[in-house]
Length: 229
Image (cartoon, rainbow, N blue to C red; front, side, top):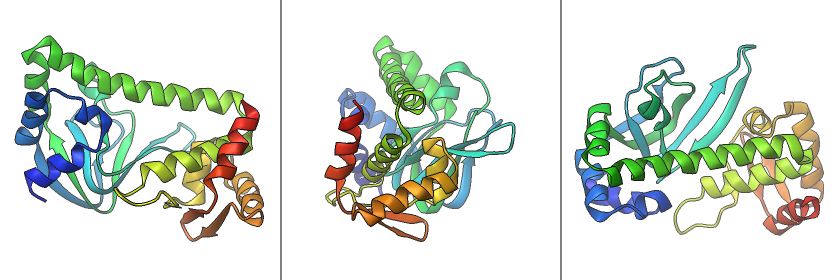
């Protein structure tokens, strides 16, 4: 992928699209386009190695608990940014980023990130907005785990991942996740998740396949959420 195409993909992200034109152009200019296939971009405990954006394919951001449980935090697809937290606090990575299948990412190295962020308060504020945006998403998800019924959390995650994995110009319908990954995101066991998914399948809301879910009726999922609000 060339830089012009990369810029077009990145403008599909609201944070990048809202940047001042000069900063957006410089991020693309100094960033390096990297291919990746079924490989770690960084692991928990690694030193910060830069800011990333997905150009094609998808990257799974996940954590492993002290008990060895693997929890999926985010599925990053074309236009999504990740990896900014460690660039702000300088601490080791708290999660891992794994390129699933064939991917391309834009990689803004630590030195380039710091140079751009330190040039002006407006540049620093722009990167801080990305951090705040991701913090809000995380807090919303955490709140739902403690306050929402399980069936609502399942519906929320299905809608979230369908939209996150949606290809530009196409309808959001197929979610490419294993039940183990989806269960960890909902905060329940795989067996408990399967009960809820099977119920939704019987009602015609979705259909289950290996490592994927196809949603047929987003309206039904949205009605489940509204009933609990």
